[in-house]
Length: 256
Image 1 (cartoon, rainbow, N blue to C red):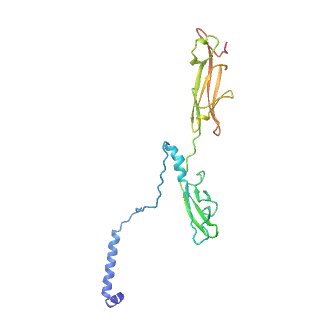
Image 2 (image 1 turned 30 degrees about the vertical axis):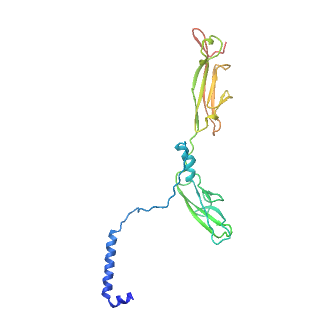
Image 3 (image 1 turned 135 degrees about the vertical axis):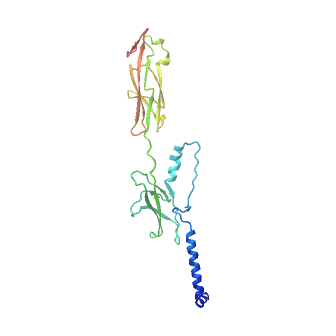
């Protein structure tokens, strides 16, 4: 019906075509062009609460595990069951870098020597028909978690001078000058695991050790070791024991 009208009136058809062409030319000049158009991609927002934790603890215990795993699910249509097995491959068909468990939870690999960006292929295979497969791509980016800082321990004070409890005129010396409380400053390890020893003999476990001057030679080395690290970290302090005589001081002598 419409085509018959334009066949009988060719001039009308020409005018309509010219009008459409002009309208298109005018529209082209008014269509906005942007190098990065405002497109809102799909996004997922995850909120986690960890009251009382520092930012470093939240990052290590919450943020990094959340960013390193994703849960996949598969639906098998027109099959006796919805059961599937999971597999991770690389883009060449070989073993993938990540892992996935029987429930479909994919875990990204440790960064290590892997490239900055790589792609894993997650494959769901129907248990009833192994030829029926579904695929998903996982893009792994980022530098990975920072390596754990090396633990260290430092003993305070590093050097101290004490008096023997008896002998010579040591009775005139106050008792606080015959003992010393040593403290171990431990970073990136548990201070409760610090082992104190003198000449290889364990004497105490914990972040502090109270040394008394009774029964030791004139020079003593006290070691503080954190054995739970690889290799164990150690620091030490030295104690010099003195005898007091009126009116002077005699050093490096055994008790009288």
